[in-house]
Amino acid sequence: MPTRTARTAWNGGLEDGSGQVELSSSKVGTYDVSFPKRAADEAGGTTSPEELIAAAHSACYAMQLSAFIAQAGGTPQSLDVKADVSLGPDQGDGGFRLTGITLTVRGEVEGLDEAGFTKAAEDAKAGCPVSKALTGVDITLDASLEG
Image 1 (cartoon, rainbow, N blue to C red):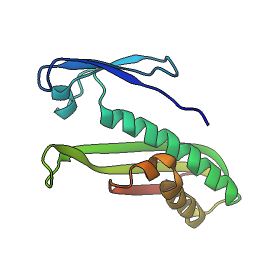
Image 2 (image 1 turned 30 degrees about the vertical axis):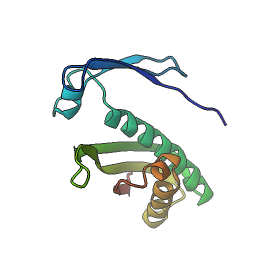
Image 3 (image 1 turned 135 degrees about the vertical axis):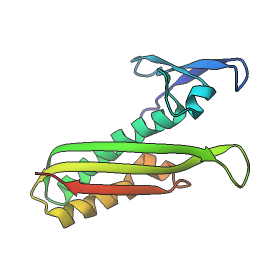
């Protein structure tokens, strides 16, 4: 299996510095990052580690869910997956930590009822490689069929 690479060039300190994250393997882009914007409610045109984790988690989860739906005898027509990754204070060690992830999925699936879809969705939450990597973070799931 391949290894994927991203790199960050950072200048300055935490509060006054900034950087750029480059998606090196795919070469699809370079994105600005800064701690003040990371900690603010409005991202102001910059990304953050939490947004990048959310992107990775939503994509990984969608792939895993489509596989589990097929294994259960269903055919996914469409899956809309959103990952919300929260950053907050680390009460134990100081600093910050990921305080939670909410996966929200709405699916149009042939051949599975709501119970079958829910089981596939829960199994995908546990089986997704990104979920496995984030076992230290509370991950919740909101899954339902549409249509």
